[in-house]
Length: 448
Image 1 (cartoon, rainbow, N blue to C red):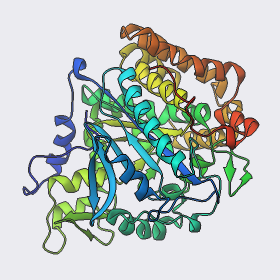
Image 2 (cartoon, helix red, strand yellow; image 1 turned 90 degrees about the vertical axis):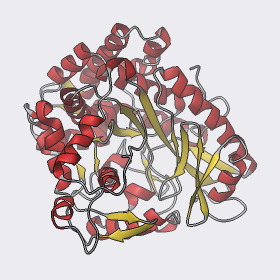
Image 3 (cartoon, helix red, strand yellow; image 1 turned 180 degrees about the vertical axis):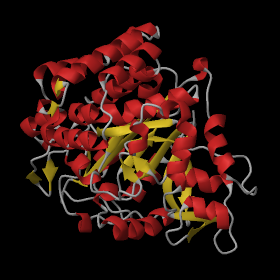
Image 4 (spheres, rainbow, N blue to C red; image 1 turned 135 degrees about the horizontal axis):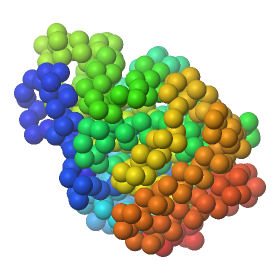
């Protein structure tokens, strides 16, 4: 599994058939399936409680420069240091200055966590020296969207105005932080089932990992204000692709997903490190007619897939989204949850049988209910979110056990079992203990 797919040639022109073949070529053998993690963190200045600037003595640039000697390779954009790489670990900056950790693809959750804990210790040491606080939370609790400068990475500077014009909201990109798990697929049907599972299961993920109750220093009516914000994001490229809910989707997932993606507008293409706007042209029209002197090449398709934001999406892997950023124990639990359900055939089928919603409007209601109410929300036909989530966590544990996973992987679900029984989301704990007690600290780690 890889974080970003590439094709060997950047010069051949592609067709619609090649776009579909990209997914076929990404299939993995069962014994080769791995798991990857993306973990976004919000940083605040302890003195002002506002976002951390990119430039300056106490800045994002200073963080990256200080981490660089610890075995990292620099990632530059327009001559500026904007990220780090160490073996398979990637450290990058999101548009609003959120720091994103992306793990190497690993077979064992313990190996993913070891990478994460190593990085967190390094980051904590640097942030403490600069009087910066790391908040494992889903929405920036202080300041406004306008108070957060866009990280001056070429792609972001080009992308943010386009997204702002289409949805009048850059909050999803600049103010939020989430946790995401990436999984390999062994067949077209497996990929399709994981996408269906992702969409249908995500309201319960929202409820279980809801951890963004604050907005501009005040308490909101939402357990996950992050999810509320994303529900207003550019609907041309996000939300709930209704066709995935079709019962026949899984058997023709590659073609269906390709058709959906082809008819979405392209943000831009890249040529010689320069981003070129296609003025709203869909990828289908770009394939068919080209744009000016440009024709579609493999990396255009890869880039396009990465600018679509449904709650479950497919690239060379299936990415399962919707979890607010939480403290490290919940990262382990999220990884164990998805691995247990998605990599065991019986657990996957049972979860899909349990989550029988087929109507996109019902699913939208569930997302809203989860973002507002957390585990106390109600799901038509399934009772409370608490009851449905209890079943899903049990299925995940059984799925891990059948995979002969180490006992520690199953044990990572214990924190979810406890939260479900108490009917609490992380936001309830954050509200009770306060943000000061929610920051990443030296005792935030867990055994891998």
